[in-house]
Image (cartoon, rainbow, N blue to C red; front, side, top):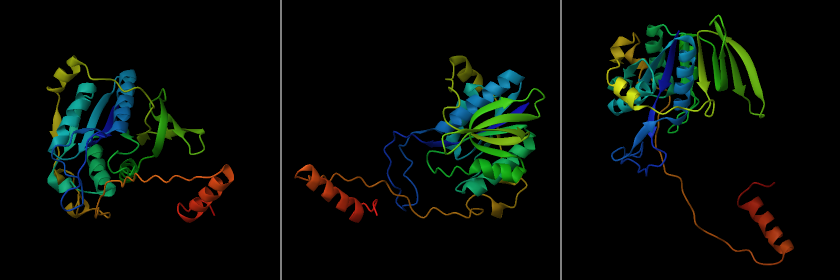
Length: 265
């Protein structure tokens, strides 16, 4: 059984960020980049399924050359090999262009199951997995908190976390694409043996021309969404003391909630 797991490298959540001069992205120099948090759960789920079935985990990553470090980490965790799409013509795209490129690379490997994280911590579109499924024409499930492979390996029973707090259980035919939720498992740490073994594992570089897709549909050229500007959250430190008895304070609070915060009507 071949299992694809899609991963992304993102800025460390603890990093101190600065906006780039053109205002369209962060200044990356000096920023630590790490493997996207929910992708670590997708990697762990893929490894567990492979261990139960004797299958093979293949990591797929689209990103700049620095993201090769994230690919190496997935190999150190136990993935058998990786496919890396770092061609500049593929970079800077939205979820549609990115998912389209990843789907083409995945199709060429003939996998049975694709796992991704629920969303990236930098852009948070949560759409790449569904785009991959759409491009491949495969069933898709999001916010997956449980995966059980059928004995015949032709389907999976998927448990999804619903908005109401309830869980939904479905059986989905393979091949399929699943976006897993954080907390579905306990991600492992790479061992020294795994780190050493990763140095010998294959990372196959794939260029835009290898995908068989019109270049106008890839990267920034193939995107329908353009990031115009980004900004750091505005933090305020103003404190207003409201004096008086309980009735007077409550009256002032209600007025402010209605007129300033506009949360009461």
